[in-house]
Length: 239
Image 1 (cartoon, one colour):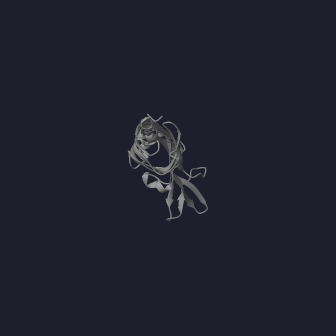
Image 2 (cartoon, helix red, strand yellow; image 1 turned 135 degrees about the horizontal axis):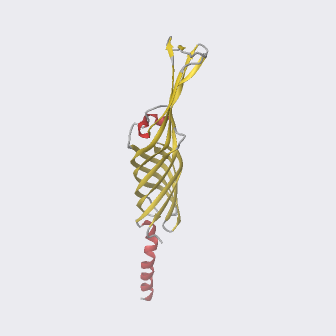
Image 3 (cartoon, helix red, strand yellow; image 1 turned 180 degrees about the vertical axis):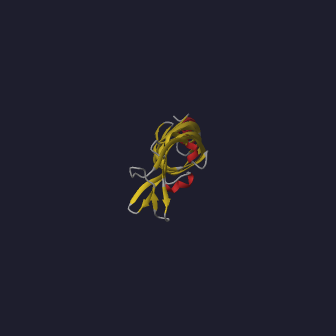
């Protein structure tokens, strides 16, 4: 009788501890991506080509999930665009052996995307309920803010053919060129504002403390790709 009673008490105490990794909890998350890039693959997202857009981003949000499983959540996103991100390029106009640059270039200035994303981490393999391998998926939208600097150069010439021109020159024999610099809203450089945000990444997650998960992810992060991002998830409740 005493043995049966003791076993009942032990089971009552042990069962919550064993099941703890599979209990669903609310929590918070933060993600930092030191660098993302938007290569030529995504030129269709922008008004001018070629494009060389890059930056970093930071995300904070709420999640609901399990220590030994995945989670879903909603995060606010601040996707910074580096000030050396550019679009457009100069082309060359040639007269016999002389060629000069002409065209427009656009450089972002203190610009960023700010928005929200619904996301989910789906593990497909787990090691000792501690390490999970899976995919991170997400979808959302963000609006762009900030400015861009436009540098324009226009040559004065008469077209002789599709390939050659006759440059107009000043009294010193220099080719006449008009160069201007102006500022426009950064939203004028993107085709969609707000911009769709899509994540499809491979991830590895580790339980580093009760309620704490550390995750590294990499892959598609529209409007670009990211080599790696680091996420910290804290679930309220696990002991």
